[in-house]
Length: 412
Image 1 (cartoon, rainbow, N blue to C red):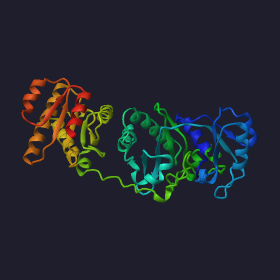
Image 2: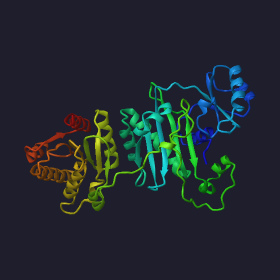
Image 3: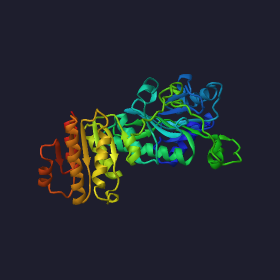
Image 4: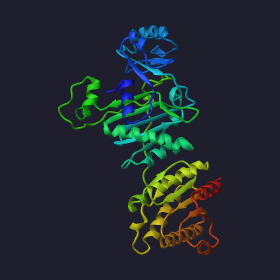
């Protein structure tokens, strides 16, 4: 069941996804009491795509033009569907437009995050550049950040757009949806974000659990609240504020990379990206901060491994062995030129990390694989660490900014 745009945006509002001031129009005369300042855009509320091309979206500057435009739109069928409602919305000047979506991949049976830096009218021509991140485990902000990095976003946009994706995912899960799409997500010259158009596809078999969605559809609630097999929603098929494109005929294949055999056997997850800097950290927050710092310096992570809390490595040599395993994982990709190790732990833990780095690099040197390493540790005797590292290709850093700058510089 596809919701109308104004219904989708009502859900967006509940999730604090930014939307423009708007007003539902049930009759052209309603525009005489319009509370939104002109200029505004009038949008036909039909489920079919191609509204703009068919004449279902019109910009108006005053009440007289708005009433005339509304009369035309109400009497305009789009794919044999007449609108019962129009949406009047404030005009917005976007400096940049993105495409974002969360949908269910019926083949992999898991949610997938989609994103492209070319949204709106450009989405049809850029389907081959659509980035995707399968949500393989319990959702965390990692997945949204990973999509941002794959899309090539930088600076403050990584955080702000990630926050939008996290809210989209929460809506997707809470309402048992098949698709949540924003196209375009407008970005103003000042960095303000706005969902300029949206599409939501609800799962018919889940309406019994969501009477609010059932009420929107006008359908009778199913007697069972069990969610059945979900159908595959179309991607990019929603109406566009500035575009009439539909991309459901070019839906991308959702084939996540197979996890490493080492990762599976040792319960360390390698998350693969598209750059040339491998990252090894401990803790979700530290890993996120490291990814952001590298991106801020203009670098591109190739992948990362989060080792989690160091407290669980209490057995003799456990932390050293796991660190070497993490290094093996991030260095599997031959495009990795630099490994950035950012570990926060006690002095004794730092000693084990250093021993792991020494052992790993010495082994790689014998195999003629030469890697640069940037190492940031805390609570260490820097002179002692330098002496232990000897002539190995390791740069020490005392802060995250310094470590990320050295890693990016070495990767060039």
